[in-house]
Length: 555
Image (tube, rainbow, N blue to C red; front, side):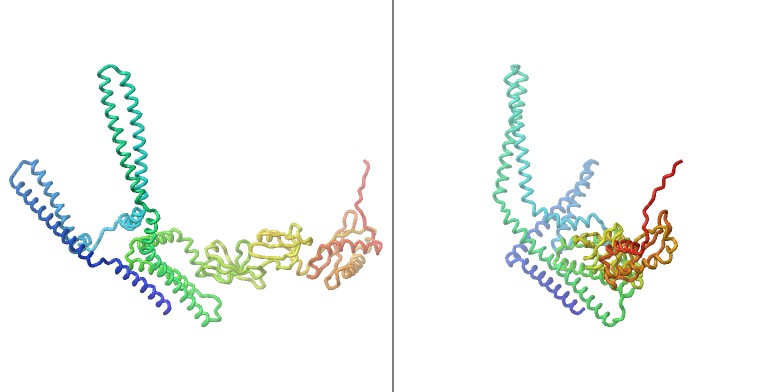
C-alpha cells in the first residue's frame, strides 16, 4: 500500500509540474502584458462612453413621452425605450464582466440552477467540434470554391446557349415590337453572362491563392505537434495515472492475498467474505483509476478530454444498466453462489472439467488431457451447471496409449488427447482425428484395462447326450491351451464355454475369453482365434459341426 501511495504521488506531482510548466510557457512577455493592459483600458473607455450615450438617449425619449404626443408615437417611443434599456443592460453586463472577470450569470439568487441535459451535452461536445472544424477549415474552403467554380461554369454555358437562341430569333424577326422585346431579353442574358464570367474569374483566383499558400505537410505537422504538445501530453499523463492506480491496486491486492494464504495454509478455497471483498476491490480499482485519470485532465484544465471521459463514464453506466441481469449472474458465480461452483465437476462443451479456481478468469482442469489446464472468462460459464466430484471420478474414457473400440467398429490406439481433438492410430498405421464431442458420442470401449471377447459355435444334435457336460468342459480346456500357446499364458485370464440354446439344426455354444491389458492390441486376433480353436477341438474329439438344412415337402 505504501508503494501504491508513492506511485500515485509521483504521477500527480509530474502532472502538476507539467501543468505549471505549461502555464509558465503560455504566459506572455512583459511587452505583451503592457499591450493587453492598454487594450483593456481602451475597451473600458469605449464601454463607458457607450453607456453614457445610451443614458442620454433614454433621457431624451422620456422627455418626448412627457410631451403628450398621440398614441401611435407613444407606443413607438415606449418600444424604443425598452430596446435602449435592454441594450444598456447588456453594456453594463459586459462592463462588469470586463472589470471583474466574472459573468453576472454565474450568480444565483436561491442557490439553484436550471439543468438542461441537451445544453450540457452541447457544451461538452462543442470543444471537440470546434477543434475538428479548425483542423479541416482549409480543406472545406477549397471544396466550397471548387463547387462554386463548377456552378459558375455551368451558368456560363447556359447563358451562352440562351444568347445564341435569342440572336437567332432576332435575325428571323422583322416586326418592331417583338424585335425590341427580344433585344431587351438579349441584353439581360448578356448581363447574366458577364456576371457569371466575373464570378468565375474571382472564384478561380481565390482557389489558386488558397492552393498556392496551403502547405499540407507543414499544416499536418503543425496540427500533430500541437496535439502532442497539449492534448497528447494530457492524454499520456491521464492514461499513465489510470495504469499506475489500477496496477498498483492490483499489485497490493495480490500481495495481500498471498499474505492471507500464508496465514491460512489449510484453507483451500476462499470463503464468501473473501470473495465479496475481492469483487468490491476489483470494481473499486477500476473506478479509482478512472477518477485519477479525470483528476489529471482537470488539473490540466483540459475540458475536452474531461468531457469525453465523462461521456465514457455515462456510456459505461448505461451498459451496466442494460447488461444488469447478465452481470448479476456473473457476480453470483464470482461469489461462488451460482450454478457453477469452485472445486466441482462441470461438463464444458461436452468434456468434463474440474473447476480449480473460480474468478474473473476461471481455471478448468482435466488431468487426462494434454493442455487440459486452461483459463476462460467467467462469462463463458453462464448457462452451465456443476456437481460435486464423486470418489474415483472418471475424467475421460481413456488415456494416451490405450486401445479403444468405437461403436462404428473402428478401433485403434489413442496417441493424442486434448480439449479439442482425439487422434487414434489404427493397426495399419494411419491416424484418425476426431473432434472431442464426436469421439465421445461414439461410446469408446477401452480395451487396455482387460476385456472379454466371444464367439458363437454350433454342434450337431447327435452329440446331445454330452452337450451340457463333457463338451463345454473339454472345449474350454483345449481352447485355453491353444490361446496360451498362441498369445502367452500371462495374457489369458479365463476361458469359458457356455451352452446357449438349442437351435433349429445345431446346439449353440458361446466361447468366451477374458484377456489381460497386455493383449489389448491383439483383441481382433483373439476373436478370430476363438472360432479356429473351437473348430480344432471339435475335429480332435470327433464332434460334428452341422450345416443348415432345407426340407422340402410335397403337398
